[in-house]
Length: 274
Image (tube, rainbow, N blue to C red; front, side, top):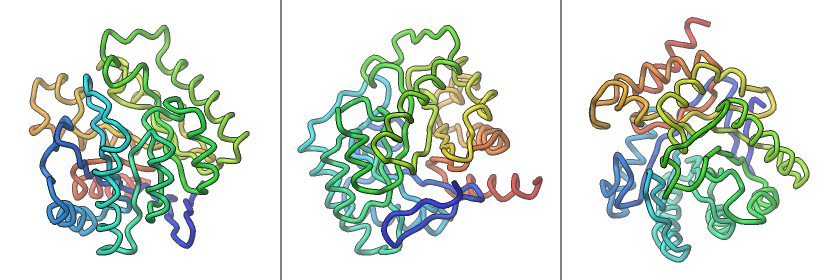
């Protein structure tokens, strides 16, 4: 799959692209609370687009380890005014909405969202996959063991790659049955995995890359960088760029990042290698 479609909008991913993160939450692990109002959010979106983001991923619920799920009404109150404002100012923007709720997905697409990014991969609510299929938008299906509240409480796998692959096999079957064909898969780095699990997934990332289901990687400033190097998230840009390079060489088509310019540079340089 080299192109993603939503209505009249399309995105060519034959060459890898960068998804810039905009967190509307007060408690996200790296940038929570940095964009408290619409004006600050619009400035950040402009920065991300100027630096080369092909997609902007907007989330209104923190999913860092130990975070609590907010109610649907609060998620909508945070999210929808921002979606409207962003697309009014940047009508050509391809907006991804990070949500695991079917009703939020419906509202977001109604107001112009291009893509739905679901950390539960369709497991949080019965009918999520069918809802996205009916909306006819691209869908990012992520793997997570447990929930954000408990996902890092000693996650255990007999074979992390095999178990993540089995999850995708089952969920992709559900997508096909529902008529949902534009599915991007995300192994879920840091979501119910130890540092060792994360590096195993990265080393064998090519096993998930298929022509039918493009691969999204979200490594940006996560614990697999910070703990490995004994640094803070604020110091993890260099390590993130190194892992982005490896991910691209192993088949990633979309990089979900906090730092767009550096990720775009990684895409360009890896592309020159061939």
